[in-house]
Image (cartoon, rainbow, N blue to C red; front, side, top):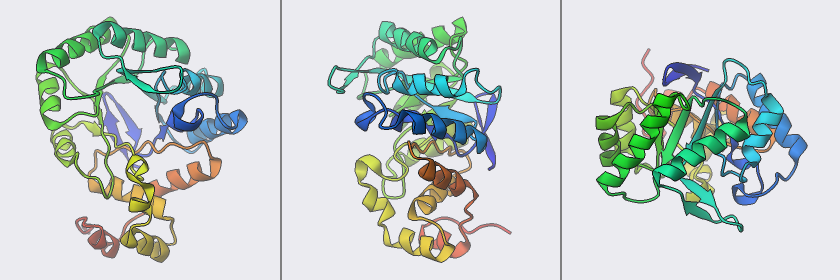
Amino acid sequence: MNTFPLGKRKVHRVGFGAMQLPGRGAFGPPRDRAEALAVVRRAVDLGVDHIDTAQYYGPDVSNEILRSALYPYPSQLVLVSKVGAKRDDKGGWLPAQTPEELRAGVLDNLRSLGVERLHAVNLRIHSKSAPEVLAEQLDAMVAMRDEGLIAGIGMSNVDEEQLRQALERTEIVCVQNPFNLVDQQSRPVLDLCLRRGIAFVPFFPLGAAFGRERVLGHPQVKAIAARLDATPAQVALAWVLAVAPNTLLIPGTASLEHLEENVAAGRLALDDEARAALALPAVRA
């Protein structure tokens, strides 16, 4: 698997997302704790060196599984988390956007993962924040970076205007936005990240919240998968990697079988016929 910088570290372009380790809806205990632990360990064995997590996955469940499976963490492993949200007692998603809540979120991640510093933390935006509110949030993130609690600042669910505002204030090392074959609304954000050398980490690369069948059932995806002896999911993931050199995948799963399939997508080469069908430029000789 080739690499791209995430801050000051280069990581393989196929990583692992820990959101599916807890129960349904990223809430409560895992369906099978033993398999969840095995998935995390196998991911690292397969060369994954970038894991995305959050304390509010569970809450605390994803981080606890990662710590139980991998602590002390391999030196090459890059742990990225996010703040800006919390859960209610029924698993509902609530905003946690004040500077005080952002700091509490970082401290909760450090505690539950058992580390003194995170490689990067994404500021999750819930809505169109006023510029002055975003400025306060960014200042809180910068203060934690200066304190040594985080090494880099990322953003999630941002539009181009918000990203430009952030870049005027500080360095941004990664951006997490929804992006896949049938939902490319974040293309301007991806293009800006590419120009600035920022890692773009798409979530829902297989369509999840927008309907997996729209991606995995896409006629061209199915036809290419059959011709290349791959699965539709592998074709969809390979498409994301082929869109731009700064895309980093973090497909999540609690299944060993799906983990192997996802990581193998990083080795799937889309030929010119496939690229043309999926509106990608031809491979240069």
